[in-house]
Amino acid sequence: RGESYTDLIARLEPLAHELERSREPVVIVAHQAIHRVLFAYFMGMPREECIHVSIPLNTVIKITPTSNGCEEERTVVLQHPKGELL
Image (cartoon, rainbow, N blue to C red):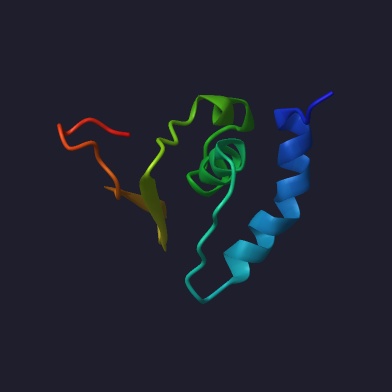
């Protein structure tokens, strides 16, 4: 049996709290489900919506804390020569 999103959220919660305390930039390389959960957490989304977060391949998502939550910036790092995402 695989890990459910509920299990994943519980497992990542301590990490999310640790990341909030970090004052240095952090790079997270992980599976899309982990990115969905962390993205939803930092963007203040309800837990049940994390499964719908779009985490495209070949894209860097920069999340910057602000006084009103977090801002996101997405940068595609690899595209097909015809402009399509790989």
